[in-house]
Amino acid sequence: MPVNLLSTGDYQPVEKKFKLSHQLLEVALEMGFPVLILERSPLVTTDLDLIAAINKKSFAAVLFSTSFADAKATRKIFEPKSPAVKLRFEAMEKIASQGIMTGTSFMPVLPFISDTDTDLEAVVKMTREYGGKFVLAGGLTLSGYQKDRYLNLLAKNYPELIPKYDQLYRGNYGPSGTYWVQIASKVRELCHKYGIKDRIPRWIPPGHLATNKMIAERLFLKVHDLELAMENRYKIWAYRKAAWAVDELDRGIEEIYTAQGIEGLSAITNIGKQLAGEIETMLKGQQK
Image 1 (cartoon, rainbow, N blue to C red):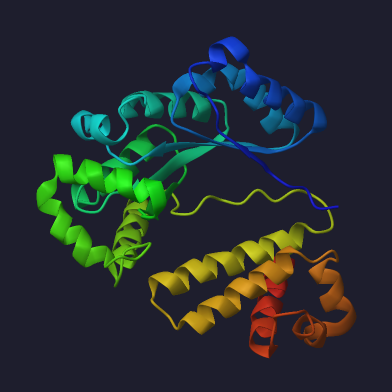
Image 2: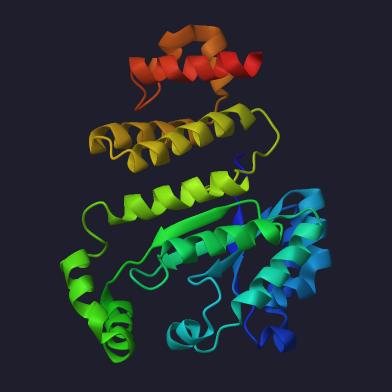
């Protein structure tokens, strides 16, 4: 049976009183369930011992969310009640000191506000200095109430940026053109510079499907590579669907390959001959 990952992140101020997240983590520990926590609040460190126990028994990771390096004035505009960015990184350091996987969710990067080369490098550099192992960068999407609120704040505080946003989004959900590829590529280069990753390393649970998860991870990483290279979208989707197919197999892919060779691999849904050949190479590489 596949092992799923519990994703949570609810350390609101009332957590001190009700301890709902604490209780949730207690259940995860009891059940041996792995957890992924996405937080802005340093309150998460109040459960550090519990998170460490989960990590020892199964797996735990904590991502700290930010859209800024440490610009207090800007943060007060868009996140008026959120903790200071410095406090988030100090909490990251405490998490990392316990050998728990941690890093930064740099989402959303705000166009023309927190996307300068200086801001991008500052976030990556601080992540490395405070023990983080990765930076996941994500773009700003605009729709519904969130779009109205953001554009109202923009018009009030950065009216000169409205024409730039009109040109960048053109009424769409996300930025048009090559904007996001350029930002993601810069973040990747900076991560390489500071010796961390631009994707979160995947937790691979032990068992007969472990190789499936490893192969799927490599295919998903290939998808990201192709996106940054602005490859043909059909090629990108071919790799993405192949990754899903391998990830969702209920039979070990090594077993399939041992019994049927490359023909067995190419018989898997959404895996043609070319991708079967690439997977064969991956499997042979793992056997060395």
